[in-house]
Image (tube, rainbow, N blue to C red; front, side, top):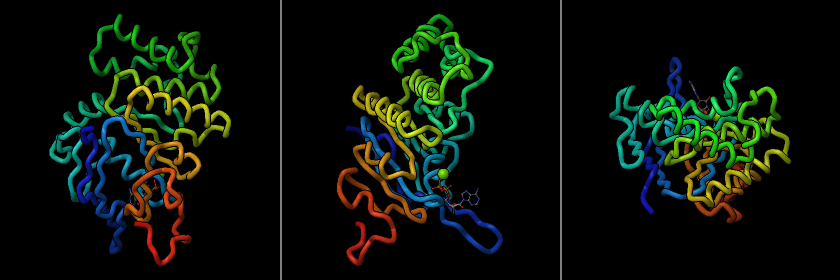
Length: 245
Ligand SMILES: Nc1ncnc2c1ncn2[C@@H]1O[C@H](COP(=O)(O)OP(=O)(O)O)[C@@H](O)[C@H]1O
Ligand SMILES: [Mg+2]
């Protein structure tokens, strides 16, 4: 397996007046092609900061981020937009669908940016919607769907460009637990099909659906390993003198 995402001593420091917040505090990690990883931690632990860096929406203050072997820190805006469109698929808590477009048109959007010709756009968007079980609703608008269905559309949109990695930021955060489990099953199916998935969540029971957990506290990695090891879901207060390494 080859390294797809590599952080070398990545730091992100926010300065406000005299004070500093280390939202990422010397994070080093490697995620390989085909992995299903959950980045977990309490509110303020640095999950979104990590997600934004992985997603090329923000750059580290110091340290190096290699995406598919390429140094993201040295790229200009256009190069970042291109690599983002080519290598990354995003799933957000609030779906972020365009209300005036049909489901088919929503899923076509990333392909439009990538310059894919219309007939192929159409065919691939339809395939992606069929894959998430919405092949019979191609012409519907997002408002005609339930929350779970809308999240499935956003998953289809994340998939359609065949990205190297799918980034899901609290994808079940707006859903009831039953619908949330369906969405997680779909992510698991995508992983079984060979996709690389990075799932961001504050919820341990969701994180354990992944193979591997990376736990953050105060911007630092305090656990990185098997999602099913008992140490994987230990919270800060419960860590004894043995530490969490
Ligand atoms: N734009 C910003 N300016 C100042 N501080 C920030 C900014 N973004 C995040 N932070 C701080 O960085 C820390 C990590 O935030 P974040 O990555 O959003 O955590 P999480 O997603 O785990 O809740 C928090 O202390 C937060 O207040
Ligand atoms: Mg966050």
